[in-house]
Length: 214
Image (tube, rainbow, N blue to C red; front, side, top):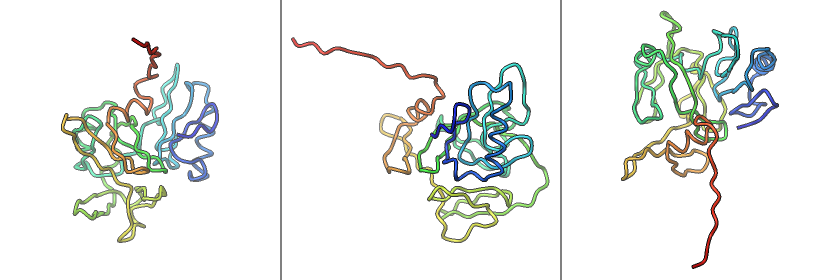
């Protein structure tokens, strides 16, 4: 996480964000109804009305263009893994019409939890099929941006065979806890700790204790 100033927090290095999106984020951070700060997700890019991939909390106003992580460039049958261990299609999530908690990844390879909403944005768009090395297929719009293993982004239409995408590796331990591999270290971390350390549960309390000799 990067604290750009008192009103902007990003999950991607500031210099890796396109200039047009940076200017848009800076302008958004100055709106009078902003509550605390703008949160910028790793997949952010310039958008109409507001930067796609930003979270804009407000007080005393509703900003329709301020939405969560951009996951609307896929077809409705695309499965999205949620923090609770279940996967739902985008169509199902859009019909639920509520905020969800998804996995996101910073440019440094740190897997974090982020709030998102699924919306039907288009009904007629040109799409491309991306085939992963495990045989899984993803259908998305040509301009959808995929994060590569080095933290950079490439639009679907510009992907080349053999390029390595930023992965999401999960497993369940013997006690039933969901474990997620942190790409920057290779270590497994419990999903509920990822949620807590992403700030979605509020401030984590600290407890002081004193050792006594007996």
